[in-house]
Image (tube, rainbow, N blue to C red):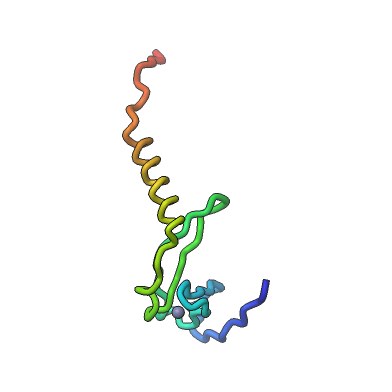
Length: 92
Ligand SMILES: [Zn+2]
């Protein structure tokens, strides 16, 4: 894994988080220029956020496979939420 040289940030705004533009694969050095385009889910953790340059945000297209996965997750969640609660058992 290649180390990305970090630009000096006098304000300390970028606290270790380096965003890479999904469109052009360049490091977004200016936090003001980083636009969150979507949050990607992960099976092994909380997932990660996908960023793009402000000028490139509208050019970033969601991964069709990712969209399909997210759609399936949302459908499953909706089904789980609409499932009636088990209320037939009495404990007392
Ligand atoms: Zn870019």
